[in-house]
Image (cartoon, rainbow, N blue to C red):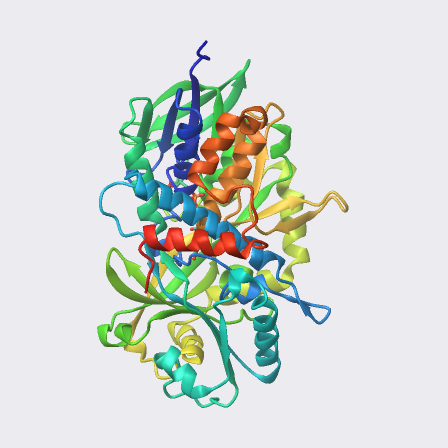
Length: 493
Ligand SMILES: Cc1cc2nc3c(=O)[nH]c(=O)nc-3n(C[C@H](O)[C@H](O)[C@H](O)COP(=O)(O)OP(=O)(O)OC[C@H]3O[C@@H](n4cnc5c(N)ncnc54)[C@H](O)[C@@H]3O)c2cc1C
């Protein structure tokens, strides 16, 4: 007997909703999926290529994923993220080989991932990190050097005019990637739209969400006409990126209490000189300044934007009151309620170095920003660079159950109601690279019975062949999986 058709409503057309929609449709073909997006475009907020760094985060070059603790390098975060990125690549390869990612889109390119440090202590850290990582198959292609001639070969632009050439060290991973997450989002959603029971409504903003009996009632506004209407849904996913906190508050579920968020804006220096852009071919990450948030790790990045090479440096952070790049100045003030005012104040107080860092960033001049770039690219010329706006991140503040105040919550968090019929995704780090694993976790959490069935398990295994096995412990499986995704996604050098 066929079960009743379920309606799943997803709020926001970013990479998270797109990934969830694709997997839900595969797992439960007899379902109706409705996506509401306030903008008139798909994947146009944080998931858009110019709004994020496009790094396929794999733990290769991001030094903040491998902190040194009690004299040893803690690899747990880097290993987890690296494996999660292999999982994302498998879903994309599956969709690509089934022609389910839209027509001819180039969304992932291979590019070396490097780390660059200077100073005796930092060089020792990088070497120790490399030695610890190289023992794992997932990082086995990494090389380390303190030889300036080798570095000149790896990253010529960054070595030109460098004065501390006896004091630098680098690592290089030849299998890094640059990803256009916006293109993946559009590819997935465009293909989904070819199903009769998938509706994608652009220009529609969700105003309210309330539970009526066993159903969710969602109030939708068509922004162009100002007309409001209500729809019912069996399941709701709040995939609204920076806009998730205010929507979660509107649900009034007990689990929403104590959450708050403060927005951090991002900016890049974008190179406009084709001669300079030509000379760099890597994503090179450095070390974040002491006291700065993890999202401010500096990097000089080759990007591929719809087949065209670009060069970005940043990100620079700053204070803002908007939760979304296309948001409103009322976003932050309107999100402050009785339940989160104390956690917000207390988290700000407990993290004064971060608050100070953000305030300082706001008052930086172009010259200050440029001076920072010159630490990485000493011969840079100010006239080759312009400042452009990146996306916004909302730093999640969570009530600290121990002291009743607030604490910063890094990473992502899936908040659900008691009935598991509503889920909200908060936080954006490490981000789009791990979207497939995050959405698999959400499916397991919200659909616990269906998730364990043979039908769902075998479909997941088809989409993600390594699912259920460890790509960290099983080197042969990792190499086989990488060979498959490299071939399908055309990542051969
Ligand atoms: C500066 C910066 C650099 C980054 N670099 C990287 C990187 O290198 N690698 C990486 O993997 N990740 C990176 N990220 C993170 C990554 O961009 C995000 O994790 C990812 O794009 C989030 O996707 P999403 O679908 O949750 O959100 P979004 O892409 O922002 O989508 C949410 C959508 O919801 C819509 N929406 C909001 N409110 C409503 C409403 N009320 N009604 C209807 N629609 C609504 C928005 O318009 C938006 O389109 C970066 C982020 C930033 C800001």
